[in-house]
Image 1 (cartoon, rainbow over the protein chains, first blue to last red):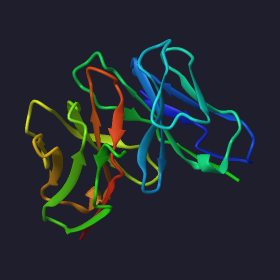
Image 2: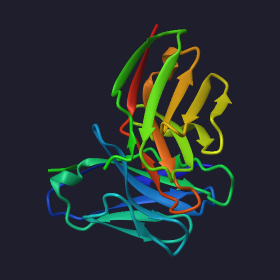
Image 3: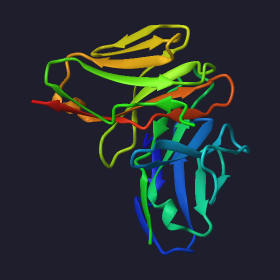
Image 4: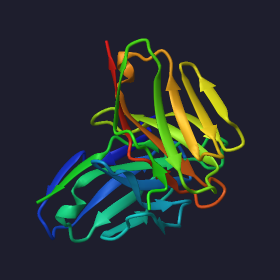
Length: 114
Length: 113
């Protein structure tokens, strides 16, 4: 079991460029999440998908789009990157059908927008 | 509006002593609380959790206490070890509702050998 995997690990973009961050989980979890972590701000929820076929906005969705491609994969797209989107991005998943509610996190993608 | 707050950005403790990390919340609808540990360049990993119907949960060296009337939870680590040095995040959720988790800003724990 690889758990939650994220690609790429590092990325540098110029302002205005677009890119997609990929996330996949092999634990058959229903729900998946995208967070960003900034110094002094903790982890802030960007978007989440409670189940395959559904997506909802989190605390900071502006400038991002998501796609729940199938049960395993949840991608995050930046259409026109801005320096304010420089951050570390984490994907997480959880099986809400069990009584154990902890999220499993990927290793993160460090994104710099210049 | 910060619904989950960790007011201490950092904490230093001697090896073998108790570490106490604190977390306050404002939303009385939260019904599940979790603590995560994060090492540099890694994703957060789950540590321990507690349901709002309990006031204490223990797992080895880690104990989480919940005081609902004060909207406060704490994580106790006894005894503290150098390998516990990491950033600790508390998180809260309305599990039966939104499936969203709100995280605090984190406390960096340093255990001194």
